[in-house]
Length: 405
Image 1 (cartoon, helix red, strand yellow):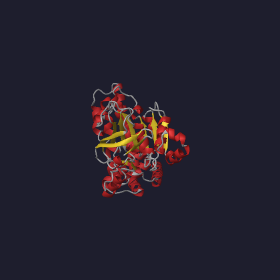
Image 2 (cartoon, rainbow, N blue to C red; image 1 turned 180 degrees about the vertical axis):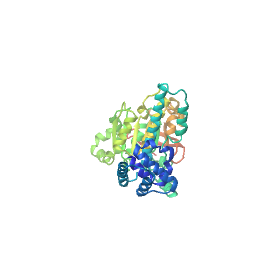
Image 3 (cartoon, rainbow, N blue to C red; image 1 turned 30 degrees about the horizontal axis):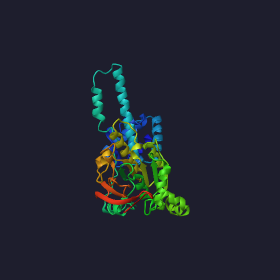
Image 4 (cartoon, rainbow, N blue to C red; image 1 turned 90 degrees about the vertical axis):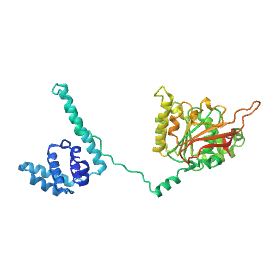
């Protein structure tokens, strides 16, 4: 490896970026160290790329050697001729790690002297820090984002790869893509599960568009969630499915292969990431998202924010859209217009990570009313996708788990 580094340092540009204290002699064994010193002299004197033949010629003209030493160094140079230069990024990483090891050994030696009473001041440590602090971290090479007009237009076109099938919502937000974290909140018995079943499985839903969808449920049993998906896909209540199995099966078939549901009670975000890595969904539903959080703190807003950050990173790394279902606090009860502060357990932590937040409300009950009305209000309270904020009115058919407008 050290000969490959010597071969790489013969490139003038690479040498200039890594010369001096970042490549101390201690990185190399005793014999190679002498070759490195000749390399340093050549770069400082001639300021150009070196070939192995040029380095060899300079080495033997500048060093007085015995016959045995000459043969040993000729053998080293034969090996250098055969070495190929490392790529810049790999060579920088190798140099950085070796450099840190050298500094670590120096620190250990100073510590040994303190333990044995051979040093009585902090001056050796101060000098070590002064000499090495600017170079301890490896050089960083950044691949900057492409912000040409063509690229930005192309990226803008795929902001809604998977389009919503609720017309009133689609006109304002259009849809989602890989990398997006979508928070969907509502009070109990408002229609959260029906909402994701509807936008995934019913006509024009994500699954019918070809998206691979995984639903992880930890509140209701997987079969009850699956029943809503069957109803949304078939536009039939479960009683109607029983009465006309063949029709239900024909309507269910187009989405069946694109939907997977798993009871995930007791699982955490690390398990979620492992599943996403293994199965690579386009759409991932966490129902309920909050219950995947590991309670590493007594403060709910802390561990929920950490879980939301983890979800956001999963979405970006594995190019999937994550729908995080959440309860709203009692502050939202009976209200039609909702806001971010009504998220249960974390008023701002989860919201800070979301690209889109949709909070679902229903009309407050009217005295004497026998049955809850179907009208629902989709409050778009955060929208980094299109920038539109406001309330959208639609209807929920609870028997078929479908949202329509």
